[in-house]
Length: 259
Image 1 (cartoon, one colour):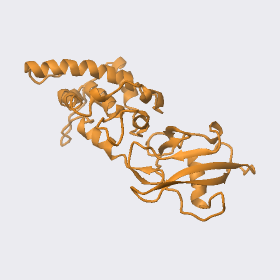
Image 2 (spheres, rainbow, N blue to C red; image 1 turned 30 degrees about the vertical axis):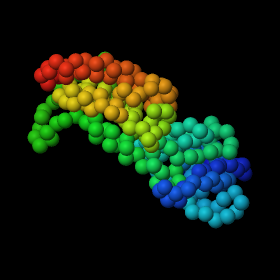
Image 3 (cartoon, helix red, strand yellow; image 1 turned 90 degrees about the vertical axis):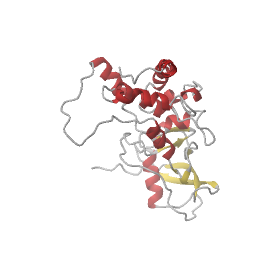
Image 4 (cartoon, helix red, strand yellow; image 1 turned 45 degrees about the vertical axis):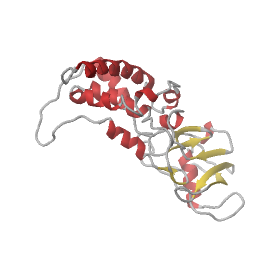
Protein backbone atom coordinates (compact mmCIF):
# COMPACT_ATOMS: atom_id res chain seq x y z
CA UNK A 1 0.00 0.00 0.00
CA UNK A 2 1.39 3.37 -0.97
CA UNK A 3 1.12 6.04 1.73
CA UNK A 4 0.57 9.63 0.62
CA UNK A 5 3.53 11.90 1.24
CA UNK A 6 3.49 14.65 3.85
CA UNK A 7 2.55 17.90 2.10
CA UNK A 8 4.01 20.24 4.73
CA UNK A 9 0.56 21.52 5.64
CA UNK A 10 -0.60 21.17 9.24
CA UNK A 11 -4.20 20.49 10.27
CA UNK A 12 -5.42 22.38 13.33
CA UNK A 13 -7.53 20.32 15.74
CA UNK A 14 -9.28 21.17 19.00
CA UNK A 15 -10.45 18.25 21.16
CA UNK A 16 -12.73 18.37 24.19
CA UNK A 17 -11.10 16.01 26.66
CA UNK A 18 -12.17 14.39 29.93
CA UNK A 19 -9.75 12.29 31.96
CA UNK A 20 -12.26 10.31 34.03
CA UNK A 21 -15.96 9.48 33.96
CA UNK A 22 -17.77 12.35 35.64
CA UNK A 23 -14.63 14.49 35.65
CA UNK A 24 -14.21 18.04 34.35
CA UNK A 25 -13.78 18.56 30.62
CA UNK A 26 -11.18 20.79 28.99
CA UNK A 27 -10.03 21.71 25.47
CA UNK A 28 -6.65 20.85 24.00
CA UNK A 29 -5.26 22.06 20.69
CA UNK A 30 -3.14 19.97 18.34
CA UNK A 31 -1.55 20.24 14.92
CA UNK A 32 -1.01 17.15 12.78
CA UNK A 33 0.61 16.73 9.34
CA UNK A 34 -1.93 16.76 6.52
CA UNK A 35 -2.15 13.93 3.98
CA UNK A 36 -4.48 13.87 1.03
CA UNK A 37 -7.59 11.79 1.73
CA UNK A 38 -7.08 11.57 5.49
CA UNK A 39 -10.12 11.20 7.73
CA UNK A 40 -10.74 12.20 11.35
CA UNK A 41 -9.53 8.80 12.58
CA UNK A 42 -6.20 9.53 10.83
CA UNK A 43 -5.91 12.72 12.89
CA UNK A 44 -6.49 10.83 16.13
CA UNK A 45 -3.95 8.18 15.14
CA UNK A 46 -1.34 10.88 14.47
CA UNK A 47 -1.98 12.35 17.93
CA UNK A 48 -1.75 8.86 19.42
CA UNK A 49 1.70 8.42 17.87
CA UNK A 50 2.87 11.81 19.07
CA UNK A 51 0.68 13.18 21.91
CA UNK A 52 2.04 16.71 21.98
CA UNK A 53 -0.18 19.80 22.07
CA UNK A 54 0.07 22.81 19.79
CA UNK A 55 2.18 24.52 22.47
CA UNK A 56 4.66 21.64 22.57
CA UNK A 57 3.41 20.18 25.87
CA UNK A 58 3.42 16.41 26.32
CA UNK A 59 0.00 14.95 27.07
CA UNK A 60 -1.76 11.60 27.15
CA UNK A 61 -3.05 10.00 23.90
CA UNK A 62 -6.68 10.80 23.11
CA UNK A 63 -9.15 8.00 23.87
CA UNK A 64 -11.86 7.12 21.33
CA UNK A 65 -13.72 4.08 20.01
CA UNK A 66 -13.35 2.50 16.58
CA UNK A 67 -13.62 -0.90 14.99
CA UNK A 68 -14.42 -1.53 11.31
CA UNK A 69 -13.34 1.85 9.81
CA UNK A 70 -15.93 1.24 7.06
CA UNK A 71 -19.01 3.01 8.51
CA UNK A 72 -20.57 -0.31 9.51
CA UNK A 73 -19.96 -0.84 13.24
CA UNK A 74 -21.03 2.62 14.46
CA UNK A 75 -18.38 2.68 17.20
CA UNK A 76 -16.51 5.82 16.12
CA UNK A 77 -19.41 8.28 16.48
CA UNK A 78 -18.50 11.72 17.83
CA UNK A 79 -19.46 15.36 17.36
CA UNK A 80 -17.34 16.87 14.60
CA UNK A 81 -17.57 20.64 14.10
CA UNK A 82 -20.87 20.62 15.97
CA UNK A 83 -22.43 17.76 14.02
CA UNK A 84 -22.74 14.14 15.25
CA UNK A 85 -21.29 11.80 12.64
CA UNK A 86 -18.92 8.91 11.95
CA UNK A 87 -15.25 9.88 12.25
CA UNK A 88 -14.11 7.09 9.90
CA UNK A 89 -16.07 8.45 6.93
CA UNK A 90 -15.56 12.16 7.65
CA UNK A 91 -12.74 13.51 5.50
CA UNK A 92 -10.53 16.39 6.55
CA UNK A 93 -10.99 18.03 3.13
CA UNK A 94 -14.72 18.37 3.88
CA UNK A 95 -14.17 20.25 7.15
CA UNK A 96 -13.33 23.80 8.16
CA UNK A 97 -10.45 24.39 10.53
CA UNK A 98 -9.85 24.28 13.36
CA UNK A 99 -11.56 20.89 13.43
CA UNK A 100 -13.42 20.58 16.73
CA UNK A 101 -13.96 17.08 18.13
CA UNK A 102 -16.32 16.46 21.06
CA UNK A 103 -17.91 13.36 22.61
CA UNK A 104 -21.63 12.81 22.09
CA UNK A 105 -23.44 14.44 25.03
CA UNK A 106 -26.42 12.07 24.97
CA UNK A 107 -24.29 9.32 26.49
CA UNK A 108 -22.05 9.31 29.60
CA UNK A 109 -18.44 10.10 28.73
CA UNK A 110 -15.99 7.37 29.75
CA UNK A 111 -12.91 9.30 28.69
CA UNK A 112 -12.22 11.97 26.05
CA UNK A 113 -14.25 11.02 22.94
CA UNK A 114 -15.21 7.57 24.24
CA UNK A 115 -18.81 7.26 25.46
CA UNK A 116 -20.97 4.56 27.06
CA UNK A 117 -23.85 3.66 24.70
CA UNK A 118 -25.39 1.21 27.18
CA UNK A 119 -28.72 3.08 27.28
CA UNK A 120 -29.13 2.44 23.57
CA UNK A 121 -28.43 -1.27 23.90
CA UNK A 122 -30.77 -1.49 26.90
CA UNK A 123 -33.48 0.12 24.78
CA UNK A 124 -33.02 -2.61 22.15
CA UNK A 125 -33.45 -5.21 24.91
CA UNK A 126 -36.59 -3.45 26.09
CA UNK A 127 -38.22 -3.66 22.66
CA UNK A 128 -36.91 -7.21 22.02
CA UNK A 129 -35.10 -6.23 18.82
CA UNK A 130 -34.44 -9.76 17.61
CA UNK A 131 -36.20 -12.63 15.83
CA UNK A 132 -37.39 -15.13 18.48
CA UNK A 133 -36.33 -18.61 17.38
CA UNK A 134 -35.44 -21.65 19.46
CA UNK A 135 -32.07 -22.40 17.87
CA UNK A 136 -31.76 -25.85 19.44
CA UNK A 137 -32.80 -27.64 16.28
CA UNK A 138 -32.95 -27.07 12.54
CA UNK A 139 -36.06 -25.08 11.72
CA UNK A 140 -35.60 -25.47 8.00
CA UNK A 141 -36.20 -22.68 5.53
CA UNK A 142 -37.98 -19.70 7.06
CA UNK A 143 -41.07 -17.97 5.67
CA UNK A 144 -40.52 -15.83 2.60
CA UNK A 145 -41.13 -12.10 2.51
CA UNK A 146 -42.56 -10.28 -0.52
CA UNK A 147 -39.72 -8.63 -2.42
CA UNK A 148 -41.15 -5.14 -2.01
CA UNK A 149 -41.36 -5.51 1.77
CA UNK A 150 -37.92 -7.11 1.92
CA UNK A 151 -36.35 -4.16 0.12
CA UNK A 152 -37.59 -1.50 2.54
CA UNK A 153 -36.97 -3.78 5.53
CA UNK A 154 -33.35 -4.02 4.37
CA UNK A 155 -33.10 -0.23 4.64
CA UNK A 156 -34.11 -0.45 8.31
CA UNK A 157 -31.63 -3.27 8.91
CA UNK A 158 -28.72 -0.94 8.02
CA UNK A 159 -28.84 0.51 11.55
CA UNK A 160 -25.40 0.14 13.19
CA UNK A 161 -26.40 1.49 16.65
CA UNK A 162 -23.96 4.35 16.21
CA UNK A 163 -26.05 6.69 18.38
CA UNK A 164 -25.85 9.63 15.98
CA UNK A 165 -29.65 9.89 15.69
CA UNK A 166 -29.97 9.90 19.47
CA UNK A 167 -27.34 12.63 19.78
CA UNK A 168 -29.22 14.73 17.20
CA UNK A 169 -32.62 14.20 18.84
CA UNK A 170 -33.60 17.01 21.26
CA UNK A 171 -35.88 14.61 23.16
CA UNK A 172 -33.03 12.28 24.15
CA UNK A 173 -31.02 13.49 27.12
CA UNK A 174 -29.53 12.39 30.40
CA UNK A 175 -32.70 13.47 32.23
CA UNK A 176 -35.21 12.13 29.69
CA UNK A 177 -36.44 8.54 29.48
CA UNK A 178 -37.10 8.54 25.70
CA UNK A 179 -35.52 5.42 24.18
CA UNK A 180 -34.75 7.24 20.93
CA UNK A 181 -35.43 6.82 17.21
CA UNK A 182 -33.11 3.89 16.47
CA UNK A 183 -34.77 1.38 18.85
CA UNK A 184 -38.19 2.48 17.58
CA UNK A 185 -37.19 1.82 14.00
CA UNK A 186 -35.94 -1.61 15.01
CA UNK A 187 -39.40 -2.37 16.42
CA UNK A 188 -40.84 -1.77 12.98
CA UNK A 189 -38.13 -3.92 11.37
CA UNK A 190 -38.66 -6.97 13.59
CA UNK A 191 -42.45 -6.62 13.63
CA UNK A 192 -42.31 -6.86 9.84
CA UNK A 193 -40.32 -10.10 9.86
CA UNK A 194 -42.64 -13.13 9.47
CA UNK A 195 -41.12 -14.86 12.49
CA UNK A 196 -40.38 -11.71 14.46
CA UNK A 197 -44.07 -10.79 14.27
CA UNK A 198 -44.80 -13.62 16.72
CA UNK A 199 -44.13 -11.18 19.58
CA UNK A 200 -45.30 -8.09 17.74
CA UNK A 201 -47.72 -7.12 20.50
CA UNK A 202 -44.97 -7.32 23.15
CA UNK A 203 -42.79 -4.85 21.24
CA UNK A 204 -45.68 -2.46 20.67
CA UNK A 205 -46.68 -2.58 24.34
CA UNK A 206 -43.05 -1.86 25.28
CA UNK A 207 -43.02 1.40 23.31
CA UNK A 208 -46.49 2.49 24.48
CA UNK A 209 -45.25 3.19 28.00
CA UNK A 210 -42.95 5.75 29.56
CA UNK A 211 -40.00 6.69 27.37
CA UNK A 212 -41.64 5.24 24.29
CA UNK A 213 -43.30 6.56 21.19
CA UNK A 214 -45.27 9.34 22.92
CA UNK A 215 -42.00 11.01 23.96
CA UNK A 216 -41.00 11.67 20.32
CA UNK A 217 -41.33 15.37 19.54
CA UNK A 218 -41.20 14.84 15.75
CA UNK A 219 -38.28 17.23 15.32
CA UNK A 220 -37.02 15.02 12.43
CA UNK A 221 -33.38 15.73 13.36
CA UNK A 222 -32.77 11.99 13.49
CA UNK A 223 -33.48 11.27 9.84
CA UNK A 224 -31.32 14.23 8.77
CA UNK A 225 -28.38 13.03 10.88
CA UNK A 226 -28.50 9.27 10.18
CA UNK A 227 -25.30 8.31 8.30
CA UNK A 228 -27.12 5.39 6.64
CA UNK A 229 -30.12 7.40 5.47
CA UNK A 230 -32.58 5.16 7.35
CA UNK A 231 -36.18 6.47 7.10
CA UNK A 232 -36.55 6.82 10.87
CA UNK A 233 -39.49 9.23 10.78
CA UNK A 234 -41.37 6.92 8.41
CA UNK A 235 -40.92 4.12 10.94
CA UNK A 236 -42.16 6.33 13.77
CA UNK A 237 -45.25 7.30 11.76
CA UNK A 238 -45.94 3.64 11.01
CA UNK A 239 -45.58 2.75 14.69
CA UNK A 240 -48.03 5.49 15.65
CA UNK A 241 -50.66 3.69 13.59
CA UNK A 242 -49.65 0.25 14.87
CA UNK A 243 -49.74 1.27 18.55
CA UNK A 244 -53.18 2.84 18.10
CA UNK A 245 -54.51 -0.49 16.80
CA UNK A 246 -52.71 -2.31 19.62
CA UNK A 247 -54.30 0.00 22.19
CA UNK A 248 -57.77 -1.01 21.00
CA UNK A 249 -56.82 -4.68 21.05
CA UNK A 250 -55.60 -4.30 24.62
CA UNK A 251 -58.74 -2.46 25.64
CA UNK A 252 -61.14 -4.95 24.14
CA UNK A 253 -59.12 -7.92 25.35
CA UNK A 254 -58.41 -9.50 21.96
CA UNK A 255 -56.34 -12.67 21.74
CA UNK A 256 -52.62 -12.65 20.95
CA UNK A 257 -52.53 -11.32 17.41
CA UNK A 258 -50.06 -12.02 14.62
CA UNK A 259 -50.36 -10.67 11.10
